[in-house]
Image (tube, rainbow, N blue to C red; front, side, top):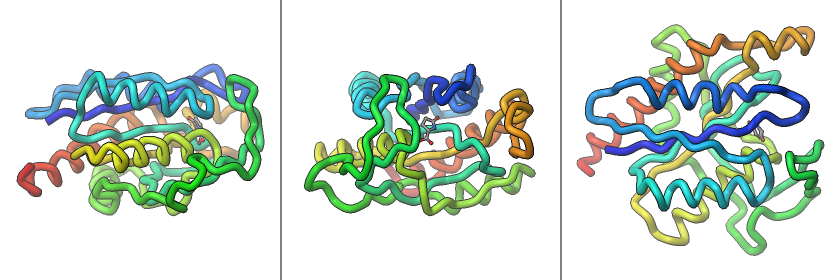
Length: 208
Ligand code: PCA
């Protein structure tokens, strides 16, 4: 089975994005029976979904896990839902800052993750890394990308499971945000590998 992991470019004045750092490393870990590809997405409305769809078309994965930074969060957040709203409090990397705009005009209000979100969070916690299901991916580029990927899969009726994981700042970022929690890169990588395995387990149990 094939998994596509995506990570984002740094944004909002940061010089790294933990999502791309962790995704690249997680894709290099060898897991029996699972091929993992990594794709970098621009942190920009529209362009991020375009790049994600191009990577899905190129890789034809069974599972897509998009990953992004959630500065200020203290654990690995397995996102449950993407909503049809772009409402940015800062400009994206291309200078666009949509307010109260739909991701897809006329699209459904929301899409739920099709990944085993509870199993993923539990498996990550069992490994000693804080994780839980989150009920909001925000209203910036990450929510937009999760919505865009799930909308594309729904429109094309593809047999692909997809969802989103937010990860905290790296310690070297958190030192510039007084009081902000952080997670070491190696733990973020471990969490992503476990998330991939949990998604694969479900994939095989479903007999696909
Ligand atoms: N986090 C942002 C966009 C890119 C990223 O890594 C977000 O949470 O929307």
